[in-house]
Image: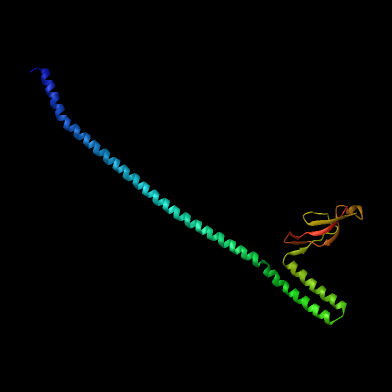
Length: 194
């Protein structure tokens, strides 16, 4: 046998011996990559489960928050409606003593024919009402002689100014205006000099 034949046989023998080892290595490699794929899939599934759980938790929190806000909105609307409905109650309750005074004054006026005492009684009632208005932040506006201001006055007429300095000023106030806490409650109805 020649050296070449010996080398060829030896190569064939090595190849025959290596074939099962290569196959085994390939199987081990395939098994290892299968394990890696399974590990990767289980990690991904764990992440999906965790994110799903977190999403469900966030949904619940959102629904609770939304329900709380809806309850708050309903409660504030109900409170506001009640406040508007009963806002005048305090004012009306405090005006009742003035009505009582008027009733007593009218009863006294029917029994007595004295105009002077009736006038004095009505002045007392008027002063009591004005004091009550002032105590609640309502103040009368002084308009006559002042510059016309459309934010404070309603011009119901223009008349010739008696003097040149009264042009553009309020010459006469037909209905007094009132302010409540620096806000116009009722505009004064005025005649403006032209």
